[in-house]
Length: 332
Image 1: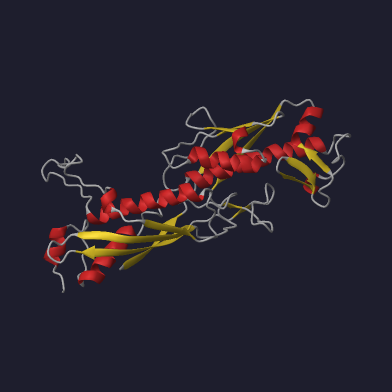
Image 2 (image 1 turned 45 degrees about the vertical axis):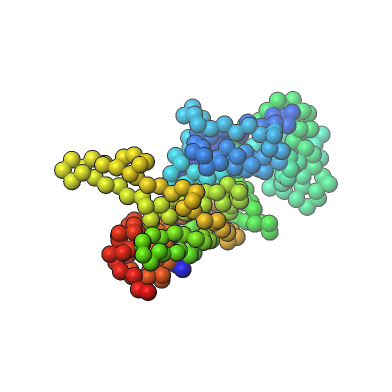
């Protein structure tokens, strides 16, 4: 058996989003983000729906166009936290604008209320101290003859938030710039069991568990899949993936799937992924750290530690192919 810890820093990146809420109850949310198959479309639609108090089928999230508000690339574990925070802040901008309309509308139950006394939940604006005094955004916009209202939001790592009793972001006006004050990392640990053939030197991973603490998890299903994918990356690196270059020309000599080996289903056991519940009040408006890289960090080390536990030999040259295992010697 073997294990290894994992730590990956939170990188700072700027992102923006636009949210346009229509009086008929649907919304269009835009950000120039990308979806590499990590679920950005799904997750940002969920974030927008939650922030705007609308069902998911009433949200259209648009991305993948440089004409849309600027967003970071999908790399360095920055996309989820930055884009989700941008979407959330854009929704808050919409609500702040609607609150300003409500408190000056003589026909509104919120007339003459102070903006800071009004909150929003599930598309309804109401007084914090008296939830019975309020109205839906649709009624307010219809009375004000508004067809739509637009908000912009910027979210980046390093801009924290203050949490309410529920642990959810408290909204604009409460952000605290913690850059340079707090260290920001995702953390995790990988555990595995391997079986080493004493005669052939082959190594098989027979059990796998990854446990991650990465702030707020926006979608447990897509996050679990991403951790599994990253762990498989690491298992491939540990046991079979190797780039070979020509010593004279520096060109790759195994640039094909016949000689560059990658894991297949038969190489991977059932994998268990767990998340430690974590509320980080400083990271960004959504408390999201990102999981793209942390899934891979420490995986190869866990496998190598398990091989050491099984054989008594410390191998430090990846991948741990059978020839290296046999040459390293195996204690019976």
